[in-house]
Image 1 (cartoon, rainbow, N blue to C red):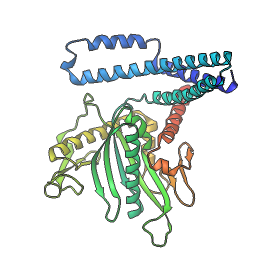
Image 2: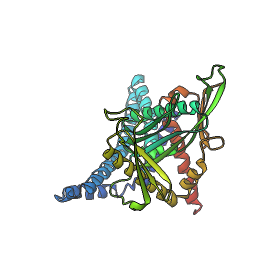
Image 3: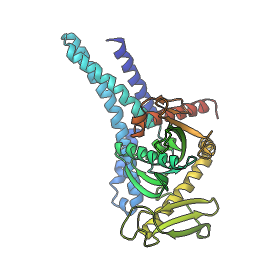
Image 4: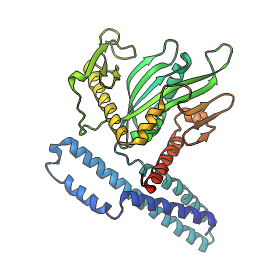
Length: 374
């Protein structure tokens, strides 16, 4: 067996070992048996929320078990094909099996990254807010580009994207936008995007074709499950209605259907303007609960809290990532040093590599802290 193939097999084995440890492989079959017994309970659906959570957790466990078994099975099958191909002097079979093992390295690495999404809310759907910062029309256009980037990324993953509210810019782009993104581990993947994003380019709005720098802030927080109780006192909120300025149904701009809720103790403001007033109020309340839940998560996790505090205003000194289109092409994450010259791909939603670098970096930091007893 060639050294490259042996190295690939060892890499897959290390990933599988890590996946098994994270899943607690020895107890996984017993946990699945318990879940299977629970879903046979005829009273299970008396509590739909509990039933849905159980079904979701059961499916996640099944997917994890099958994923690990699949990696082991496919690796063994291709090693057997290599051995048979070498015995029969069939170079084509050997080449195909070696290529399959090389692909399995990537699959194993991706599953290893997904296993890092084990935070309390990582599996939840997420809210994502974009706000333009310093730069006027330039930043409004940059905010619109970011909205498209995240929408494209989510769609490529098969996630559902729902526009919650949008405030258009005076000349171009948007001042702000809020989305709900639904899908497996949506918050876990997107949480790394909270921070200030900086764009450098030749301005399409500058007749002198000068280079401009623009900033936008991105805020990501998890959708709160219905079974998580977040108490909000009626006296702690102010609810305002106003006329929507975005695209919508026949009543847009003629009725006060948009809703803005202000949480007075924290000064958190959430809005929804894309539905009826009743629906907008419900959406905004859910968003507010999610924001308050995020604050609680931050208090529990000093690292996350520090990251949010460091985010600061959307301007110089607070950025987490730079997107440079002129005089050269580069996207660089300033937290991990990850770089790519594929600016077009990133702006079209190719974010997995960047997000993975942040996840791996966070996991390494956590491992070092655990080793040091922090």
